[in-house]
Length: 166
Image (cartoon, rainbow, N blue to C red; front, side, top):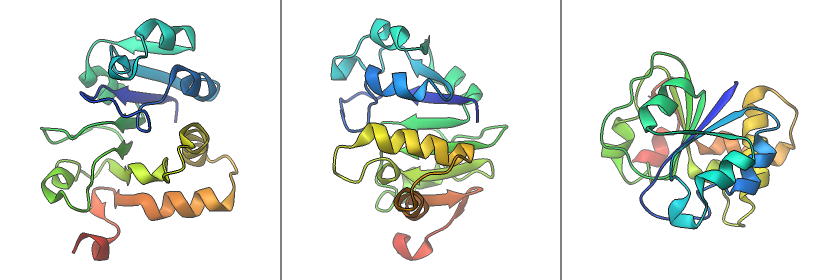
């Protein structure tokens, strides 16, 4: 995994939007690409992200095409059909919104719910950094492994936790 992408949302969710300080930590491990004005609703400027090592891109399509791991803050409106393997973290309720879930069902997608990086404690940065390290194969604490494993909804486009979707 070399590239992380953050796609712009239309509402501010400070628990779903990494701060410039968060991406400073992440950019030590990987390249971070963020859609222009993605942090605007939360009070973060493109310049703040750029100063912390982010690469700013104008459109989401470029980020989706090039990133290995993508953070979506909002629901999507079109199916994602990547040509290469993608790990996606979605800040949507895929357990209740089955229509939204269908838009992510592709053989090249492993989908995680936002709970993979947020357990309600507000400890976003540590979990997101460890989520990235987990996917890079770095050793992390067992509590994170359990959290991330429980949060995977799709593997290769197939539903992992069918019982949760009923």
